[in-house]
Image (cartoon, rainbow, N blue to C red; front, side, top):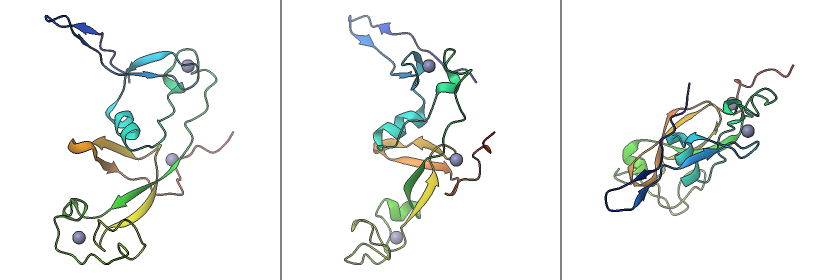
Length: 142
Ligand SMILES: [Zn+2]
Ligand SMILES: [Zn+2]
Ligand SMILES: [Zn+2]
């Protein structure tokens, strides 16, 4: 699966349009455009996915990307948007997560490496595939 690599563009007015690039986390070489998933990880303070397998220099020696636990908020879209009419308890629900969410929103731990996120508008992201933690997708160590 090749990563697109959009060249920088000089606009007619002289300004430049630069597509953000992903650097290899092994050697720092630029590999191509950042993916939506990386963008979302950056915005939400998650570690960026391990891309050494994509890098011509690092691929031969790179291990399988490590599983990383990350906490996500799970619940109905209406709840996450605060548009539901559920109870909002003072402590922010059963497990004490942020006051701003109703009691139906819960925290879940998933594997950031094997789950798939897409960036949604307004800086949030949507979890399109959740791989529960502890993750069973990690290759058995050779
Ligand atoms: Zn590299
Ligand atoms: Zn995993
Ligand atoms: Zn709700």
